[in-house]
Image (cartoon, rainbow, N blue to C red; front, side, top):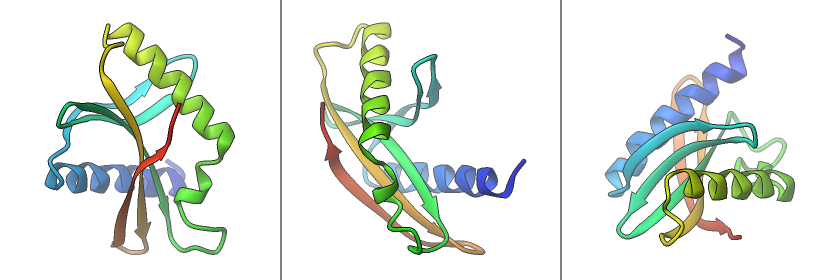
Length: 119
């Protein structure tokens, strides 16, 4: 497995732990379909939260959250709408969060950006 994929997996695992501590109930991970992929799907209270996890070693090319550009957001939204249709959850409240993970020989910091973008 390529180094960046390993770091990404570690970031996702740490993000799950972080979200659980913040009372998110994880219902799916790495949901994938022909449209795209969503890293983590969780409930927080009465809201389904679609979470994109970005892991970086530094901010040389911007923060991890800045890597979730408009194009990536559109793909996540389309994938989320497909997920809602598939699971018959169209009437649920939804939100899109980004979890930023900084990793260099271990987790340095984790930050959540709630409601980072919307439909």
